[in-house]
Image (cartoon, rainbow, N blue to C red; front, side, top):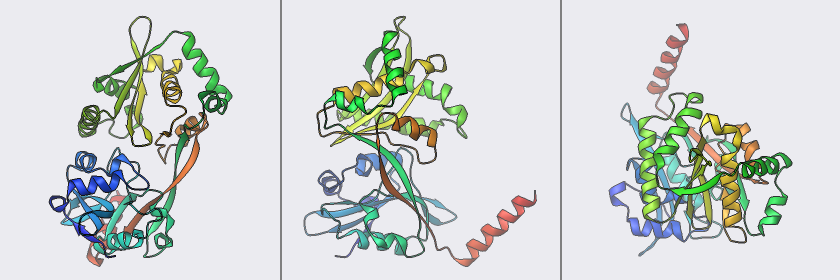
Length: 324
């Protein structure tokens, strides 16, 4: 079946979200309301449909630069890619072909593992790299889950419990911003900017309203907050979207205690704990592996087929910058 591109106003949100919710690999990032927040409604939908429903979809986030449409991964979306009602997506090649034929600059786009099942990704001048996420299925009793923790992780959690930290639920996302600004932002180029805060505030509010958001903090005996983390619980995934701690409490392992609490609470269930590993931070991945997490591979694609005059201009600009 042939895929077609829809502009945002042409997309039937009910049919779109129904496809995402009933696909073989549901991810919250592909829902229309989530995309509207992180893309500021600047996204296309590539769809395959029959008379009354979307059979498969592929969101295409973009921004405009020099009159060109550039496809690029938005923040707070580790993976986008294909949502399909078919177990082995017979629609994937049509969706991906339409993507490449319709856009001449993708820089980059993170797909999901359903999108990686096709040899097509190795054609059409696509630059494909594999990224690693870390997940932990929670089917087993907690004692079996904990038995796979690394020795140092068990030790750190035991120490965290000894100082009587309490875990409290909250909807005050701004405390988490303060932690992030103090402990994480100095390591980032530009820190946690206002736009990022705006996105996260909207995501958190929407998730709380839909009863799929969970914000947890550690509280010390003196009532001071030490660490925090925000999670999205949708379908069968618990996504660890963002976490941080104040510098003075960093060595008290509050985030490990929060994660441990969720693993305990949702053990013996169909949930998968999704650490949402950043593909460019091996030290963070090592931390997640210490909980016994397993690897989940997904592709990152980039593509460039720009007109000659643009590539020439870009090379000239780069040469001038390097001269100085």
